[in-house]
Length: 298
Ligand code: NAD
Image (tube, rainbow, N blue to C red; front, side, top):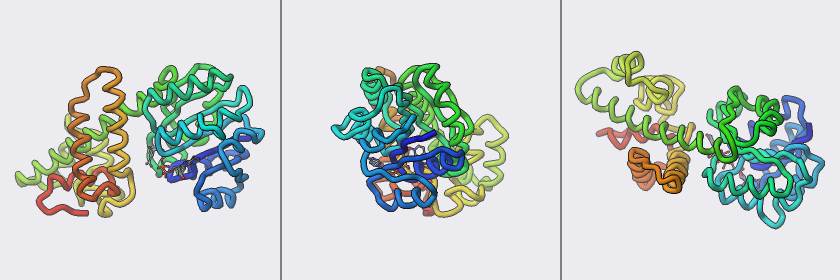
């Protein structure tokens, strides 16, 4: 299949590589020349604008962009995808944005005969490289069925969450919980250690008891408890505090529109914002544990 791909950053580049590995032809665009050059070396064809991706003879276009502002510019702009896409070309936006913007762009796409799916991902850069991402997909049954084999080249769990914007809704709900649970684990680990329990013993108890969660058993924030997590390497790499802050902002805005309280989410957002304002926004989000530590490690 000939696929257009826009947004070759930390996530988009490895995802595009997996599409090439699966035998697809790719026409790619990113404003960063080095990002394009790396994909061309891997076998992709470079084009020089979003509009040029749409006018190439592609059947599907995938976007993996930073935030809603870029998604709206790329899809709705004068030289954007919708201005040039041929009818029936399937549009798949994998960026993490608010459900409202996802629905707005999908409505514009479908009004001119282009089916669209929102398909944000979970699994980070490691999952993108390994092709094991989870895709949370919003859109029609037929379009989901059409996209599924292609998404399966980049991910392991492909979940249809309902109509337009529901993929983003599932993603913001998940990351709201992740942001809160990481702070909960940080608080509990520090309390137990301050009371005299060895951190590994404490993590072992939590991970076989009712407090267990992904933040405790797969991504524990306390240094020395686990290997191969950001806490074991000064909180470098991983999922940045500022990205978590962005996702909690999306959750809080979506909650405002739905008149739905997110009380712990708002508190979590303020804690990550405090930590980011202290200059730590680039550290992995599990570094939030340093807000609780008397001798922060980072
Ligand atoms: P990134 O900043 O590394 O990559 C974004 C890319 O989009 C950049 O290469 C940028 O040059 C490109 N871009 C910007 N404007 C463009 C345009 N007009 N046309 C084409 N390309 C354009 O970000 P990322 O880490 O790859 O994240 C992408 C999305 O995935 C974000 O919405 C993020 O929230 C989400 N996400 C990230 C992770 C992660 O661990 N990094 C995990 C899950 C979801």
